[in-house]
Figure 1 (spheres, rainbow, N blue to C red):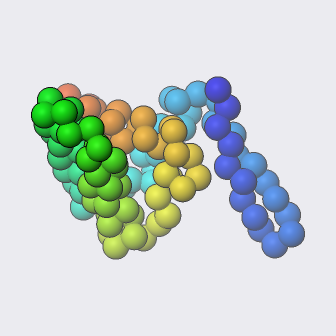
Figure 2 (tube, rainbow, N blue to C red):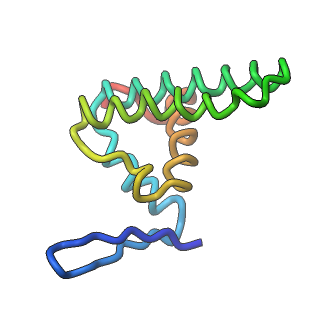
Amino acid sequence: MVVANWLSIGSLRMVREYKTLREFYSFYLSEHSNPVNKALHFFGTGVSLVLFVYLFATAQFVKIPLVLLVGYGFAWLGHFVFEKNKPATFQYPLYSFICDFKLFFDILRGKITITR
């Protein structure tokens, strides 16, 4: 799968393609260097996972879209207020969604720290 991003610079349009998730993840991590932003992503993803399991287990399927609101709410707060950049979700929705969970589990396993 190739994920592309169109950039507009005046009348010039350029595309940045990521051919692999690994290639995109490097970009994703560069957009998450602020520790508060990383912490908000970690917290939001964790709460989203717990909320999803709860809603699924209690058959409250109609409320499952709230999971996205919770997860993205914390993440976007981190980007707009602390990281001062635009969330990757707007340009690369699928890869960004996958990498939110990759970041969460990399922090849990100690492969990535929130502070650096």
